[in-house]
Image (cartoon, rainbow, N blue to C red):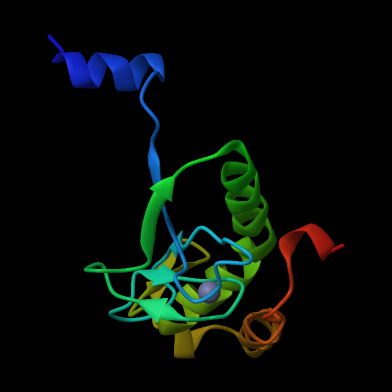
Length: 129
Ligand SMILES: [Zn+2]
């Protein structure tokens, strides 16, 4: 049994909220929830600010434009964030074994470090090719 609020959410009647970065109102960017940095769960792919779970960003209505922008940023930063989180995690899976990131083969470490350096800030996702 669902309560009325859940039902309206399921039906998509109620506007959902989204957290956007509070640093640049002229270009609203949904914060990305990620484990790529210790202790900061929210990251802005535009200005690079990190925020913890509590009090991160501004909650605004999730518009079609923000949804689209958020999805585009998530897609564009996927490899970058994966590389970062692999390099800072305590253990990662490699060839069916759990190892420390420092024990990864040199070539893989190099690849991850290159990906880690690949993300450039201050780019609107609509302008990224
Ligand atoms: Zn920002």
